[in-house]
Amino acid sequence: MANSAWSEKILALLRRMNNFYLPGSGRAACYRFEIDGAQVGWIPPDVASLLTRYPEVFSPPQGGAVSLCRSLDSYGKRSEAVDAVLQTLRQDSSLTCLRGWRDEQCDVMFSQCQCCMSRLSCCTTGLFGVKRYGVHINGYTVSDSGEVSMWLARRSPHKQTYPGLLDNVAAGGLAAGVGIKHTLVKECQEEACIPAAIAEKAHPVTTVSYTYEDEEGVFAESQFVFDLELPLEFKPKVGDGEVQDFYLLPIDKVKELLSTDDFKPNSAMVVLDFLIRHSFIEPDTEPCYQEFVAGLHQTLE
Image (tube, rainbow, N blue to C red):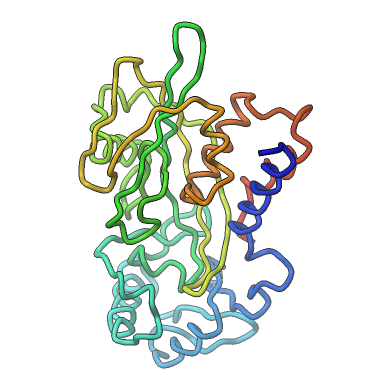
């Protein structure tokens, strides 16, 4: 693929993953979601209309915002009240994201440095546009001659989201009350059978952040990215069944695959960031270099 065509494919990926801020998006119609006076997300208008049925939990839209009632003045009260509403809304077939309900909880906070204000079932974050955090690991090797290759996972065809697509060697969302490094070690062990002694050598390198909207809501996500150089003799193995296979590929092949529909979109962004940081993509040869960097580090506003 010609370089210009590859660059356009990557720009299209970044626009897709940041489409909430593009002209013509649904942002202007969304309501700010506020807790105790602080904005923590964006609520689409169809969701806001459903929440008005529960005035003991959500205040009616006012001044462009939907707020949790002031009487819910603690983490526990907020979490219990919102969960009760969502359990009721699970019976509403119009909210497709609730059909895949899993008992996994994540914390609600506008930024990592804020205290946790509430918790939500992870599958419902798009209804409120709250930021969700995760951990992604770039597993790679360096040969004796200095050649870099990357381990990629092929997601199980039975996964609820992005079945059968290429992924990082391991990744996972941050559950409520669980630390970043703990999540990294756990996901490495469960998904790729990477021993803790190896996984703990991973280095935190950056975050990749983006906000997109689709028919299920607004998704603001920030991924904590780690690089993990794996021993040449080590081969990841399928662990908990979320992956069907692993491949060790040269960087040129990985770069080629990024521009196809065979990659899970946010994982493609994490790999793109790896290529930039390790100088496999450079500003002298990539005319869209600045656009790439900007698209990888958007913040929820």
